[in-house]
Length: 624
Image 1 (cartoon, rainbow, N blue to C red):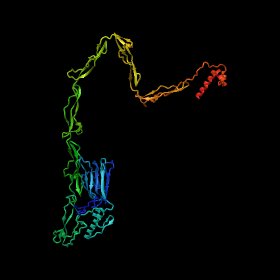
Image 2: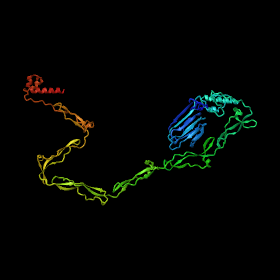
Image 3: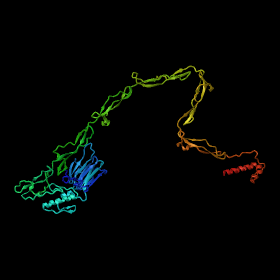
Image 4: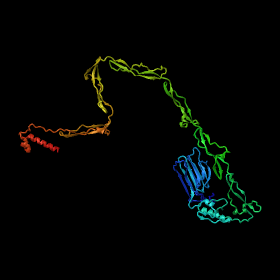
């Protein structure tokens, strides 16, 4: 069977996070957080305050950085990394507990610094960060007792009669049995209050299971034997203030001979009190720090470490002046280092042949970055400044130049009479090294030669002139040319009727042409018929903007848009003259004034005057 934290066989009790055997984690409070403030000034910056009575203290940098954590008491005493002196990782006493200072130094490690302590603390402590680069974040966590919790430190150090959580304890007694009872009462009080009691061996009676009958205590021994100090324990340190305790054995009062402890009353055995010993300071020593990262990832580099002269006193290691370590040889602060052998450049092939047989060309070779194991790796693994050239120019000497010719054309330029045959001639570099090293010179071979396919007398043919200009500046248009039927004679041509050449294929005299795209243009229809034949009418037409593919567009210039409506037939209306319509009397104006034109007789007798008045009245009404 297993033993629980209460020392009972078969018990399943365990210590909770508050340090209470069989507790339910409710007697204390966990305080945690992350310090993420952005800092600007270099130096010490306060992060968090650790109160008195804190346990399970964990201060951890969230990632590796060039910053340092520091710890000091509220009284101003530096515990770790104080006064701009960086301590090496280790254990440091402060605030009534032991702090473990960790600083990972492995190159591959990304963990930051940390302070760890079990506690409890007996004073307020302040945590600082020595700021040198952006803060990666500091996580802090500790446990403090609840409001109704009695501190185990108070229980362990309280004198009988002192107030306990504001209440007065039991009065001090000179009887050893009463004093032992008071101590047991304090212990039980601590348990009932939810704290883990601090029990020193031999000071408190052990608890027994409820179902176990207490053993019968032997009767009090007589006073023939008593407790006697026969010496002291060995000092915990050889120097720098250690501690030791007196040793008591049971002896015969008369002979002072040591006997079994059962002969003495265990309740009267003196409690060993701690005594200081070896108070003289320890010799100073060189405290050697961790090596820094190598300055180079491959090849020969440098690494550094901190060397401090330190001296131990009262379980504390203090930094002292270096002259105190003059009797010791000072270790080296710098050293060479090499993590691995650097990769190197290797030329894998010889230079290739020049890319040209003459003149200036290029040649190449294979250059690779090879590791010390012989594997080909990326070029970045090697020093790019030392990379051998893998391409260079090569000069094969001057090149010869020659005239290059094509064959003469097969057809003569004229079907009859005199014509020419042609060929292409070009001066080019000749890569045949046996030719003399000279240029083409001025003796250019001819590009044409005369030819004659026989006389042309009496031969008919169509003769085409040159094309005219395109009918439009953009878009699709047409070109014209004149095509005539001629008879070729010696030295001249006779123009004939086109009928004479009808048996020959006539060349076209018209072709389409396209100079460039017009883009969007305005198109319009013809004008409509005028709305009136005289005295001002109007006519209309439709106007559209079309692109090159004759689709609607909005890219035309609005200022160039043609008019869609205009006036027309603005001349006055002239009535038709009837030769038979005349005035038969000289005073027809009186008939008009008397308004007699409404009568048929007067309308016929004064036809011209009455008709003129009627037309004038109709025109007036039309204008109205």
